[in-house]
Structure formats: structure tokens, C-alpha cells
Length: 495
Ligand SMILES: [Zn+2]
Image 1: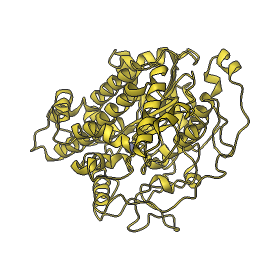
Image 2: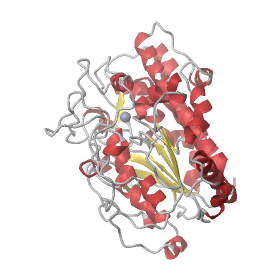
Image 3: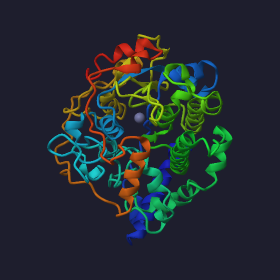
């Protein structure tokens, strides 16, 4: 798809909206679509992706698209922050600010005592105190497509945007696959509203008993039901796979319908969740207990297969982009072996010590340096992402943002054409934050159940307090890539 197609697509969308509200269609011609010839920027958000898994796969030719991305730019790591809870970090990535400033301090509301509020609701987009990157882009005349980003529900009304929201990524299975989603389901799942109808067939395909079951079985195989523990892990991982494949299909549809927007964002959860659940089977030597060889045989490849699937998705996206696109692949943290003694802990992979995430910048505007050598891989921090994306869109960074644009990774020619801009305070005039919204009574129980499944909530149903660990500890120091562990020593540092 060309950007010309996107132009017509936007006009079509405007037409649909206008017809829906009864605006006389001839007004559309002068509705001032200002589609630029801007090279699209694509952000591929991969929760918990680590080079510890990806690098050997890439070198073995099993992640050819990641290899292409790296070959056309630079691959390294990104410094993260504590605590490593997804809603916090992905909101930091989208805003360039710390939890205190953006206000999303946990999965659900925090009380004044710094502990989760009993009965607190999951945070929603209206609780965020500062604008997110999709809002900053859209409000400044850059078109945006965003799919499944954390804490993006309700979908915000951003000019020139198409947003498919996520209430809470780990619960999105429950949100998106509720059979009733399409007729009376979650309101404000998308912006514009009509988009929900457009993507309804894709959401239906993602249903837990739909066609993706076979697709999953083909890649990952099945687990015998009488292996109760492993069976449960596999069962929940299936949900995450369905969500990711569904979001991939939605994202591809947006790219196909109108071509890429100026800024495009998509989020995947399966690297993180496969890492949490299947690390003990992949690297049994890290654990102080026996893992049955039959289980290792059946489940030992799950993480690698999840990464290989992600690579397929990367390739599908890359195939729809023009040659001048800039791609940023970013993860919120890495993943290492954890809980070496606890046979019953669902999580045998973890990131409590804030191991650095993966970052790749790719495209003709990026300096061609390939995958950096271990120990020299630091490309930036999670707080640099939003300022960098703004800079790529020729917009000033936020004056209140913690990070700075990662200009150094761009070619000299690009830097000359895109001088550094004075920062701007985008918080001026931004709407006030309000308490989390509730889409419908039953859905929050689904959210709680999903957190429970993930192991984030204890048996007494009390969420684990988001206390920041002092630093790398336990088996996490044993990360096979010690060069990356060094970076953990200042996980709070920013540029
Ligand atoms: Zn995680």
C-alpha cells in the first residue's frame, strides 16, 4: 500500500464518519487531510523479549526477520526501571515519564499508603496524567495507528488516529474474545467507534475455541491433560497467543486498509508469558529440582517457538512497509531464570531485577551497526523512546520527559535534516486524570482472574505489593549474558 492509498483511505474514513453523523459529503473534499510524505515510524512492542533467547535463534537462522531488522540498523539493549510491572513500563515507554508522573503505578489503583487499594480498579487511559505518544502525534497532525497498547482503554479520541485499545494486556483475551464484544461488549474499544465493527470478524476468529486453536497446536503441540501443572501453563499461554495473533491480524488490517500511518504501534505479550511459564523446561540446569525429561522434551522449545512466531509476525509487518520506514523494536525488560527452588511457582522465568530489554532501530535513516557486541549494547533507556519517536515525527520532545531523543543512532544525513528541537510542555491543556473506568461489571472479575493466573495475585487474592526489589538477586545474577547483567546495576539511571 502506498501513502497515496492511505490518503484515500483517510478520506474514506472521514466520509464514513461524516455520513454517520449526517454531514453533507461534499464538505469532505475540503476537510483538510494533510497526509505528508513522511516516512512511517513503526513501533513493535515485545514484552519481555531478551537477546538471551533471540540471539542464538537469530544466529541459527530461525529469526530471519529480526536478522533483517538488525542488518538494516542497530541492535542492542534498553535500560528499564523498577518495579517491572507492564502497565507502568509500557506507559513510561509511551509517555517518556516515570510512574509517579504518569500516574499508572500498578495494575490497579494504588492507595495513598503506597499499597494497592483494596478493591481498586484496573487503571484505564483516563487515569493517565500526561499525554501518550499516540495523543501527541495525532494532536500535532501526524496520523497514528495503535493496537493493544497497555492501559489504552477507553480508546482516546485522538485526531487522525485509529486506536484498538487494550484494557489490560493480560486480560485482553477476556476482553476481546468475549463473544458479546461485537454487539453489546466493551464500549470505546476502538477509536473511531466504527472501527470496532471493521475488526469484529478478526476478534471473532481469536475466540478461545476458534481456528487459532489448530494454528497453536501446529506450532506448539499439545500437553497431556494429566500433566496438570504444565497443562495449566500451556492453557493460559494459549490465551496470550490468541491475543497476539488477533492483534497482529488487526494491525495488518490497518496497514492494508490505508497503508502505514505516520506513527504505528503494536504490542505482543507472548515472549514475556512464555518466558515466565516455560523457562524451567528450556534451561532445567538452572533449577534445584528435577524436571521430568518428558516435560522438558514436550515444553522445552515453547519459548523459542514463541520467538519464532513473533519473527513471522515481524516479517508480515515488514512486508507491508515502504522502504523508507523506520522500525523500532522495543521490549520493556528482559527475562532470566527465576524461582530456582519453587517447583509449584508458575513463574520459572522472571524480571524482578530489571534485566535490560531488547531494542532494535532499523531503516535507511539508522546508522548501520548491526547487533552490538555483548557489553557494548546499551542503546538507551525506556524513557528515551517517546522523545525519540517525537523527534522522528519532527516534533519536540516533552520538556518534562525523563529521556532524550536517541539522535546518535540516526545517520549523519538524517541528523542534518532533522535538527534538535527545543522541548515543549505538552501537559498544558491536557485533560485532568480521573479514576479508572469500568467497562462492565463482570469484566473486572475476568481481569482479577487473569492476574491470578499469571501469578501476580496470591492465593488470598491480595495483589502482590509492588515493592521494588533492591537490585538483581537470586538466580537472576546467573543470567547467561553477564554483560547485560552489568547494566542492571543502575536500572534507575537515565540519560
Ligand atoms: Zn513479565
